[in-house]
Length: 320
Image (cartoon, rainbow, N blue to C red; front, side, top):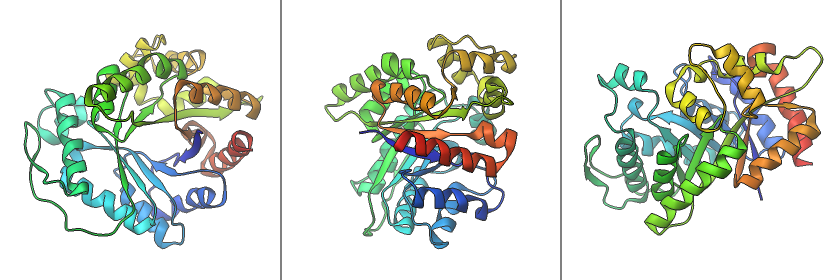
């Protein structure tokens, strides 16, 4: 059975901005509150603030960027989040864009796949206390965490293309996607996850899809909302390559046309609640286990209050 969660639709500048969305998860049928990477208020600390404010809810990071922290610190933060919230947590990681890697590391990962393999292996080993001694190309680790009773942590990997999906099938608990049409998940990502899982003789990881969407309205331009929420992604090579593989022609130098292509290609969903519910059913049929409602574009266009109301309305329509 698919579950529905919500994404915090903005980068918070103050931790109290998270609270209305945490409250929505606590009081609705939403399963989990997710945050992407932030370099304003750090996501783990924002979630801890919400828990201390009375909203101890399931949370997930989707995804935090590997160059920002050593995997030992990543495991410590993830376990601390599970302890603070009192719920199982999802700790999702990804290498980030090459330009971001270079800005922090001096040069991009020569092999993002190897870097991700080493990173997730180290995080999982630290969390499990399974002698996580690793002298890899990107990760050096000779330490573990002291035992501490805590809810479990699922280690996730951000996935866009088949090679990373196969790796997730081998080593991750959760594969996390963003801006991926249901047809692409069905035809490309899910088979690659299964291939990797078979190769490693392990269960197929859960699939979480962050789905950008908005309610239709007479004063609303879906392409403008899609652009507001995804302009940055439409300029990044790994996203444009994924979208082209999905049959959506985009040009990194023309994000306006790219946003229109997102709507045509159903990477961005728009419609009334019944139409959105039907479109989201395609994600469930494709093999998605958790659908994360992403109204970032609505938030950018109309503000956080409108985004919160939008999430309430969509949740009522899809979880009734």
